Every structure is written in C-alpha cells, then in structure tokens.
Length: 310
Image: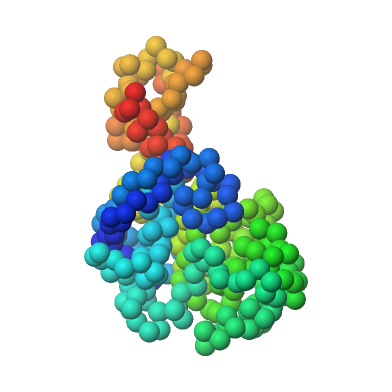
C-alpha cells in the first residue's frame, strides 16, 4: 500500500520544536502544545523509511518536534523533499491520480468560519471523481452534525468530525491523519476508533496517523513508527515493539547496580522504575518485570535524554 523510502528534509531556518509529548491543544501541528518549551533550532528529518501494508493501521509517534507532521507533509508532497520517495499502490506520489487514492487530514481544511458546511462540501467533492454522497450523509448523521450550520458555530470536536467526514467520503485507499482524535470526548474517540477499525476490515484501506493519545494506538494500531529528533527509532509491528521492551521496578538501593541496562528510568520514594530492552534485561536484585504499553516506551525514551543530562 504505502512505501516510504529514505525521506530526508533539512530546514535551514529555525523551526519551533516542542519538548513535551502530550498535547491538549486544538491545533494538529506538532508544536501546538501550549505547555511545550520552544527551541528555535534548525531541524533535520533523516532517512525515514517504512512500509504500511493494505488493510492495517499504523501509528506515528514521537515527542513534539520529533518530525511526525513533517513526515506526513513530505508523504503528501506538501514539502519539497531533499531526497527519498513515496509510493502508494505502486505509484509515485507525483502521479496525477495520487490525490484520488489518499484521504488526508493534516492541518486545517481551509474552510472559512462563516461557510455553511453543505456549501463547502459541494466545492470540496468536485475534486474527487469517486465521491460518495451516501457515505458522506451517513457520516454527517452519525456524527450528529447540522449540514447547514456555519463552521464557526461548531465545537472543536465537531470541526474534527466534519473534517473526517470529508476525508472518509471519497473512497480513498490510504487515510493520512494528524492528531485525528484530539479534542474529542472519550465517547467520540471510541466511536472514531471503531470507524477506523471498520475501514480496514476489508483489507483494501490502510490508515497512517500521528497522535499523542497513545492509548488509542494500544486499542487499534497494528504497526508503529517511532521518531526521535527527526530519526527513526523503530518501525514494525506494534506487538514486536512491545515484546522488545520491559518495565523493570525495584528498590532505590538496587538502582546503581542495574541502571546501565536502562533506556530511561525514574525514581520516587518507593523505589525506581525503568525501561530496558528485553534482550538486555538485568537479572536478580529482587526486580519486578512487567510489559510496557506504548506510552511507557515513549516516556522512557524521553527520560533517556533527561537521565543523560543529569
């Protein structure tokens, strides 16, 4: 379905880079978190390669500023690549039919605040020969949207639902989304994840999406691509990533004996907890070993940098 080969992009001018992996902002941009510290530094995306087969969901994860949104925009040809190429269904991204195969929600959709939804939809669907009115109307009804409402009257969550209704209504084979469930209430997020799972059941549609809500990926992702500072830390099956890591806990007195095994660790009054590779698991010392989730892995790789600085 999707092949990304050696994508590289260097931003000579400063790019805002956040440092906190969670975001509650309404923006889908990676540097959107109001809690993020901003570093005005050059940024380089280096040799990003991965494959997403048909019929699967891949989560793109990393801290703010890791390169997730840059990667998605390079796949969509919105940025000029320094090197690398992208194939979808065996066709290069420069193919004139590329747009027909891809449904993308990366950044604002371009609707003015006073536009009525049905009028914008009428213009939007002209770009897609496989537009499905029945599917669109079904999603509008499912999302409890008023098609005649003006855009500015929608809540942030409703705006995301409307954007997704557009993206999902032209029978795209590859869906690319940047923070699709941000600002949705828990019930709406679960509803959206159910829709994603239904889309890929037939084996013809694949979904690539970035998110900071890693619990969503625990529920629905088949594959994970993990970026750190513009470089790829991991790409492959989610279960493989989880199997390759373990959470290790113990008493503080034992930390010095085992911390060289840790990717990252933290301490508190009860002891320490760290992330290690399963292949490098320290033995003995009264340690408790448990399986991590995706958020654990993301947090402790971030802790690695903090531990190295101390």
